[in-house]
Length: 186
Image (cartoon, rainbow, N blue to C red; front, top):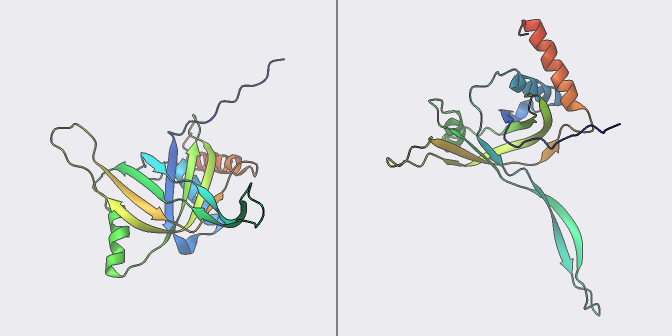
């Protein structure tokens, strides 16, 4: 009996949802993921990088032990998220970043959902207390035929893996299918 082949999921199919940090409960996260899967988003990101965590270490050079340097864990450090998307008439990312210059400090939580070939959630990561630290507008060049992109860099206070062994992806997909059937989107 031949085994079932399971290929790795592609990195090109994903969705990003942002919400105010004060609403960052588990229920809100599930709602956002379902909204993402039911196409209730205005624009998608073309690129997302920085999903990383790094364990910082402290070195200790023990006297008389010249063959090794001991490494001790200190704390986790989170990568800066960089998200790029095609420039539209909407100014949501600009407004979020520019709001800080006007004293409107709004941190956002977010969910980055990796989708499989069928567009269903495969893996999801939640970041908390996101803070926009850099907005970059498009590079303009009349000699190129390229899409105008904007990007935003987000510092945050941690990542959580939301799916995998917990079965969250299956639960989100089932909930999305249930909502679609209630709305008559067969």
